[in-house]
Image (cartoon, rainbow, N blue to C red):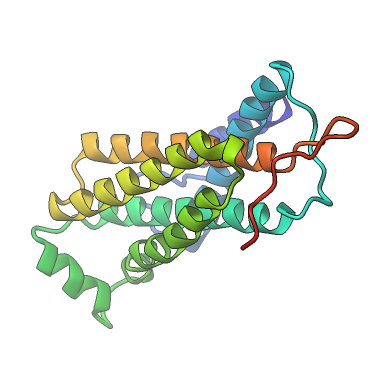
Length: 210
């Protein structure tokens, strides 16, 4: 409930502070990033509410997989934030071809928002490797969830490459965003399962250590 309220307030702030239309200020980038992070936390809270309401136990932050889970979730947040910045840049500075877009990304005369655009695919590729390793390292009981994460990572990378090749059409951007939300929910639930408290005498699913 708290994050639903803050989501509404942040959304209203975008209009009240005039962070819309052709506004290319640093303030808009920062505010948009904060809005997106709040959205992700809200979605995580909803997913965890459903997860725990279905009978799962709480989490144990002292579990061996706590650090790996935190890195995976933070990686997903960084991917999402850089993706939002890239989407804003694509909207404000549309290009006529992939080559023209790349030239603009590396041009010293380009505005800051355009120069930041190149970081999203680089970060997404690097972080995706970690997410795949994280998902594959789960226990046998978590194999289905891990497989779903790996499939969503592959789908996201494919959608991202198509987005670049097709010059970011709206329908593909929406699909890209949907896949990002599904991947985020899967990661949150995978982390919750990894850190789930064990009943007395039983061992909770943990990340496998080789």
